[in-house]
Length: 431
Ligand code: MEV
View 1: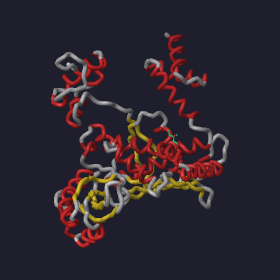
View 2 (view 1 turned 60 degrees about the horizontal axis):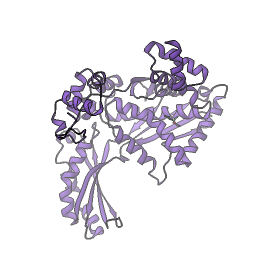
View 3 (view 1 turned 120 degrees about the vertical axis):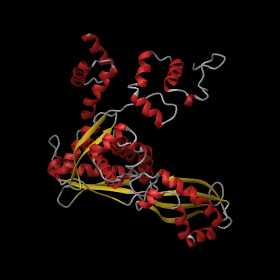
């Protein structure tokens, strides 16, 4: 197994997906020289692997991430415990601390637009772009009707086609192109399937009306019609840190944000910190975090220059005001939210009633995560808190057992030598 007829080690495995899970694991074990323990680790409890086998193809098992819960979140006057799946130490501690600071100012105020997604149809070989745009405009009603042909559930729930927009591109590397946008309200679904079905159903009509040839028909992850906004004010006194007065910290946070507004190199890191929190909730709730990542970064560059997704400034009282706006294409029906067993529990912990409410909580998490990072960065630096938590991972990587991890980590921190080599030395001394 894992070998072809000539007994060569090969990755060319025809029909691999059709094999029973255990046989797939045997083949991979053979290929990669896995031992019985490693095979066992892949298959895990068996139950999870079976579930996973129904979700994707070529399944071997499951891959687990730590799941935690962020505390202190008050959004629109409501308390939330926010489940987060993430491997990076300090994300949960930092976001919970920041949520506490927001709470002192009354918590987060968050809103979300209607859940309107964009579906795109690419039209090529259009004989006359202006005439094609006019034809789309004139036949909007019929096009909207056609777009609503195929998803009865969403239509009955009050969703469906909202608008059609024709976007001409007279010059592209392959000649003139027309792009037709369908704006489609997907209600509590993320909506990729509904939108993709709708644009596929619409394409023949678009082709007839424009005289062009339709090619790609797919949703856009730049979901700028479906954005979530969260904002809040932190009383300056709450920001006092290591002897630095709160008003001073507020000003330093504003300066840190200005850095991310003017410089894309900083903005990338600033926004990565925001996504540390956002992705963790998106993953825990079984949503598509690649879609959220793509949307966030494209949105951050929407004005032609990549910049911060947040805005921070000191208000007239000397307190710190912060705000975030970003696309938030998350759902709570369909997809893994309703299939992944842990995601189902996570959704229950979160207790949101709609995709919009989920989007509001996630935006609040992004804002809080950003605050925690730039507050630390602009005051004591990030390493102080990070390394303390990172030390545990270093100790584990060096082979510390459960009851050794904290002791070794403490020692590494005390010595300010947080590296695997030192952890191994300490373990050797102990063992
Ligand atoms: C690390 O995962 C995230 C930070 O780099 C974010 C930031 O720099 O704002 C700390």
